[in-house]
Length: 418
Image 1 (cartoon, rainbow, N blue to C red):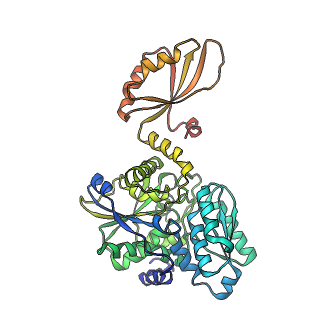
Image 2: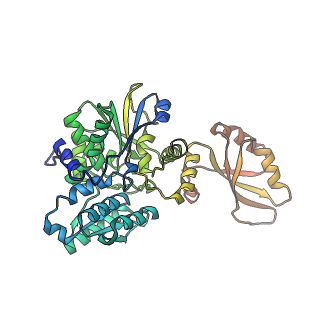
Image 3: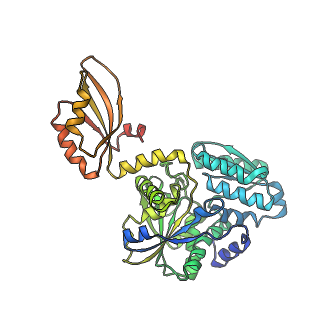
């Protein structure tokens, strides 16, 4: 490994031994859907099936189990987007250690409730800031003022070793080394642990890191030669929306740079819906990152055996409306227009008859304002039967008397719709 950061394969094995009996192995399932779609042999490592419904308990338990009696007495503190907090909660409840967990306001309620439930009397939860980094700053300040041990979500060799047990476990379950592994990347703990273990045990396995397109902080770090802070990130993939990767995770990743791919948030939503509707799997956005990355050009030979880490299933059901919306926009089936209607009977009916195709549907109709008695602009959302129906509909729009302006996905106005 580069620099002074060393996480060995032996560290990963030792981590697995520490939480044996507390964190059971997660299943490894072959995905016929993904295998057939991409011409690969795709296996899903189902970390969503663990008690905390993510892999985060592995690193948290490995770190907290190695604290001294004095450190345990002072308690621990962490920041989390939700899953790491659940891992810390489980570890502290199992080991009898008091914890304080800081969560950003963007953390889904489902994750907040699970943190409380797992930690019980051993945990106090504080909601602080709009992003993970805001919560992390508050947790660090509390650690300095109280003497509580900070439990990093990803940037600690003990956390990294714990996360490395995911791929070690998958290889044991598969009975052989795969041709490639695809792991989701936020702060880089899972990626670094994967690199640490595979570099020593199976150096020929290709490692692919999948990041959200709106928060590709590890790719930025590798390009810059050091961790850099992203000014603007898309917080939708809350489990992987990290502005700055860890110093330790970066050092290990830079020692054997993997193939990094940025996955559009809309593509992640499409995969979440496919997982749910076709496979009966509830995945959170970060959990769907790895299988969604298969849609990118990964340079894999046909028939290659690929393990994708489905890293978490803590998704709030209330988010599915946004997930469906983002998926439809990404697939080119959902479009918005500003339409100026004449204020006369039958104007809307005429628009429907002259513009919409047989499989198209109006999903939103809202008058923006009425500035005169003759015309009135409306925001119209249209869901197409198929993406290729857009061009014919645009041609039909050119022939109607209404003034129509399309709202493109990159328009600032679009942020109020999705």
